[in-house]
Length: 255
Image 1: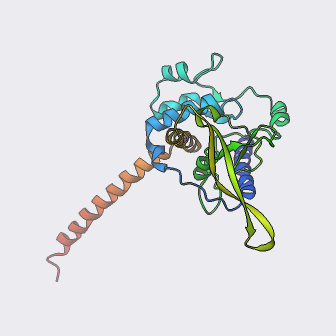
Image 2: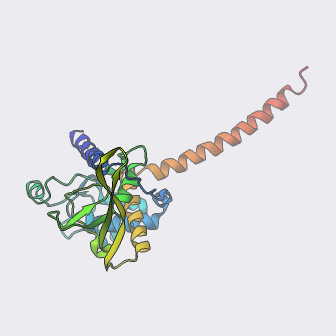
Image 3: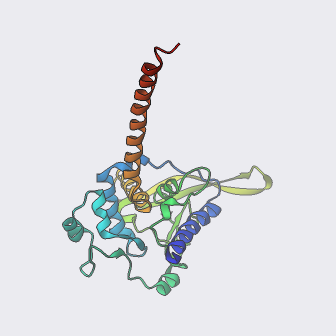
């Protein structure tokens, strides 16, 4: 229970800290239909293992749970496990927390529950993650060489830069509408410096798959829960119709 609480608090701190730093940035809407798309979830799981699991653990998710999104045990072994891991193991990392804190300024949080944290009134945790993963840009003033619009001065480097390519953010200086004596920097778009392995559309789609997996991982039963809920509503609708007709037949001769 203590580990679960720590994971939730770390995820919440990641999101709320970013929101406090990110100001009034409007979050892009995550295409939530991806959560029920098994192909998207499988691709998201592959991206998570290849790019996220090097630093971020998912200590409350076991590899064998991926069978719920259509993968066989052999596919999990062949494509998603390191040689020393077992299918029944939890998704842990070998990164030393002390080293991580020294390199990045903070220990990378566990991501099992990160998608359940809400960023703000403007979007959900999934909206935050979807926007965050797509707004990295090159910033030589940062120790890692990267910055992020959603989480300014983030300690995390852009581990997916080979897929997205290198981009620079353009800012324009404008008068502060709340204080005539101050100027503010407004984001004015990205400039692609070098291309990535994926086109912008393909990269956005890949990030949607990754966020879909993070959303599923935070609540693996949500697909089954939705299906059960739809079934229950259909049953209630049919039963209500039968009860209505039965009631009409029972009372039809009563004056």
